[in-house]
Length: 316
Image (cartoon, rainbow, N blue to C red; front, side, top):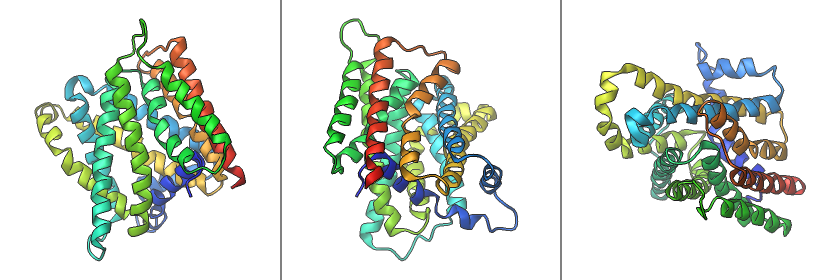
């Protein structure tokens, strides 16, 4: 049973990363394999922090493409390149599965597309740190919903208080549509976790995720066509899109794969709870996004809820 963010994230990441070790047996090691080798000598906590930083820097880089491509075109680039990378690594077998498995895989792909589009649309309207804080409520809700600990209700209350602090009351400058989009992304992340477990059981390794990414690429293709003019006119945009995919997919999965071999599950969950804080720092340094007191209190509430829920899973 998924009882806390530690187990949620482990279920999410281990299903995705299990086949990367087999990919490392090719005569010419992949960049991901080389990265894992280089990461072997680093402390696992450092690997997780680097993974979180890579994801948030990727999001900041994606935001820089919005002025030219918009959130939709940027989503297509991120998903398209990620799909190519994961299909090349996973080499999935399409045939030989039950119809229900294919339905789950298609739903998984639709969820990935919707979650990414909602999140990118959110960070186009609100600071990165706030968007990540709100999105993190998704896995927290999955964890609390499956928990057997009464104390997790307290952590849920902290998370709810954080969300309420971000509500557009009074003279707050937070875009309410951005908040709604970030919460939609949170719901997508929750669905992503549940569907990932279902698809991971039906398809070996990361093949299910790779095929789902292919479905997402097809779904977002109209967004890519609408952005094809700027893309064809400026190859640097394609390079930036590849950078977003690598920072958000290849590097984090490789680092977390190496860290999970040496790190207890509950420690992994607590470290992942630092993601909203890292997103706030990245937003402040790269995007020059300063947060007010209410936003910082909201971030603290959600982070405290996640850390507390992750720690409560240690005895399960």
